[in-house]
Length: 133
Figure 1 (cartoon, one colour):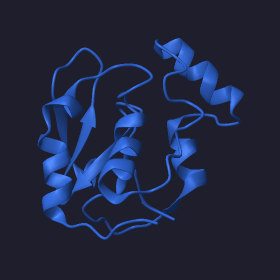
Figure 2 (cartoon, helix red, strand yellow):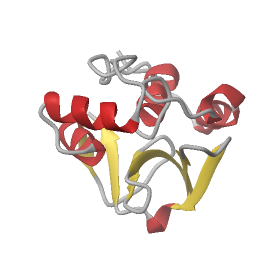
Figure 3 (cartoon, helix red, strand yellow):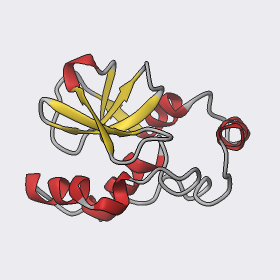
Figure 4 (cartoon, one colour):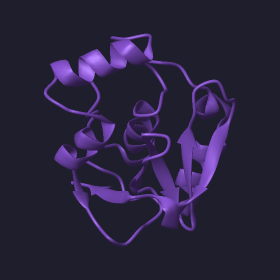
């Protein structure tokens, strides 16, 4: 069962140094957002079929297709509820990065390959926002 958490818990997750390190199959452009949902809110791990089963971008793409999805955006669309409003801890999609991130109000945070730390993007520039079911 999901926990009710606030801004402080999401902020602590975003500030935790280990969460800003990109690693395919463990903490990448898709798993970063899912990891937050599991660690902060206690949601069921929706990435159980992906976690640790690839080590490259090509491997991730193959596994996404093998599991019946077209993209990371498709994974979110099939497992969360799209909304026009944004809230702290909601999942967001940014098309330039083709990645899922975590909303923290006016800004959303993403992991980017070959960059240490989180990338900060205006939430209004994200194309999709979801809350988890």
